[in-house]
Image 1 (cartoon, rainbow, N blue to C red):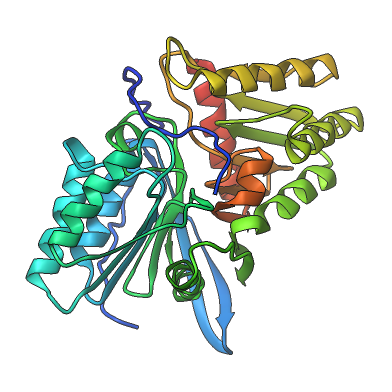
Image 2: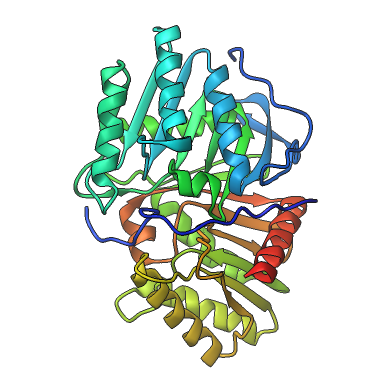
Length: 372
């Protein structure tokens, strides 16, 4: 397995914590790429949807491996593209290429259904998202902005009711080329059906959370608030090891669920579980509140016996969000570890039982800690 880290200077607008509101399909290459970290044909598990047998296969797209996979999916779309995103920029670089590809695809095939659900009013990136909305709408692409009552933090795309690509990647140049990121790419009609159901709920009622859990074989999609219970149960049931990487961990008296999670990690360490954690930190003026919160979380954990806690380099953004339990269970996706993320945001996360994927994430974590 080869991991290639792509370093770069920090750039604006990744994300910040907030309070508010069977069709023909593109073929996937059979070999691994070297543009980041990727594994093809990771696993195949039997799944069932409405009593119809189906198979769910998936792969890990980490770091820069995400962008070419996304472009292949868009380029091969025949019937539909449903995209939900927190940050979607369009001025230059890879993010502009994504916008241009969507517009070109719609122009070449006017009957192609292209729908975008986008965060519209949160944070420094809102104005840039609106620029993207205008470009897409001018090309006849349906764009729906979320409610002001909630933040849309999910990051995913579904193509032709078969392929799903969802995880921690935003559609920004920084996220797609420089950050430490983890996303899963599925060839799975059952998971696509779950995603499309959730996407339809977002369009119909953006001001309401839509928690749900859909399982195909060893894979479960967790929508919106469904993540936290699954996460805390993983920590509490650990018997050997917990390996995790998190962008934002808000342990504070005002954040009950993050604090409960921190205490669960401490309890796990005390019963003999080895807990290893990798956190984001930044230099200069980039998202200082993230660094402050993460340092407080690390201090709390270390003071209570969880000492294997690490930070990334101040010049590297580690935006990935995953936990591996006992080398066989994985929970990963878009949710940071804060009550705000757990309870007040649209999110897409994944829970999987797969020792191969677990080992890949553990190895990825080891390499990133070594490089920090």
